[in-house]
Length: 244
Image (cartoon, helix red, strand yellow):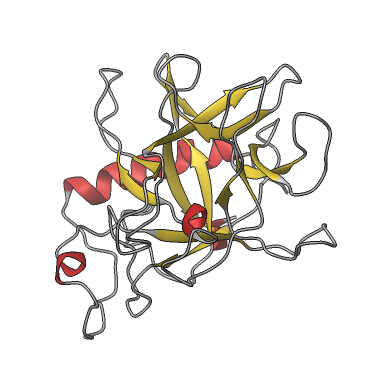
């Protein structure tokens, strides 16, 4: 029997609160290894919905977390067409109803030799599905070209994993940051950010801002860079795919 994401959230949130309140560490110890960056080893780990460390190669659903009138909700992310009807490259969108599971993703960080995903670290985000586009088989997120007349930077497929130091790959790096408390009564959460560091490309010029949701005239909710007007930073949670 299919269970809606909204139902999953209502079940898991009490579990998360219980785990935090009792200081239960559900994560496995991290293996010892040498980091490429000293600062990276001191960054706080990203936590999933069960308060476990988010790890490289593990599949997660990215769930927008909404808090409205005392209830949690949000539909997972999947892929959809562009606003002009073009199918390829696919853009990252929110599923239209909460009975759909969306598509899970995996994370790979810039340093490549650690198992744990940490805050404020450049990441590749790859959708765990086969591409429906013949010209590009890449399922890695990237920042699309600036779109007129909407005046938006959307998130699409076609990125490149790794391969640092070039303008061709700088749009493929995102980050996970903590979502700052905004007065709605829910303090925990994360947000996605596009802001590549010099470790990715020292000479590249890039924008630097949060990722949010833009509701188009076609009714599709697409991932886009925020403008603090129509697009606000999006709070997200990471739900391990094996829970569904």
